Image (cartoon, rainbow, N blue to C red; front, side, top):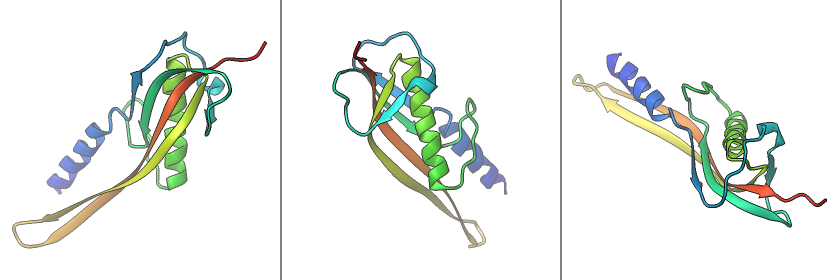
Length: 134
């Protein structure tokens, strides 16, 4: 039981930073995440701001326990938009998504086996600033 609690704590701590970015252009003043649009292809005129990654795992800043792949994808999109908005982007071009299933197996000193698993969704995108026509 104690090992299960330690494993849960480690999983939570590993999930503390489910979003990251690499700046590749000029950042701008932050915008509201509701202003950030998701794109599958690049619009006509845009500027690249950053590469961003997001995961659906639990985070202290944004606690969520999600069970379906769709709810995990929704959390990834939400986190990508928040990160992009903080960098001043008004769009995110989706580069890819990935599903991961983490499994662990344990055999105790009495030979009893147990296993645990959790699933996670990841998304990668490019934060962009779409230049609006005037």
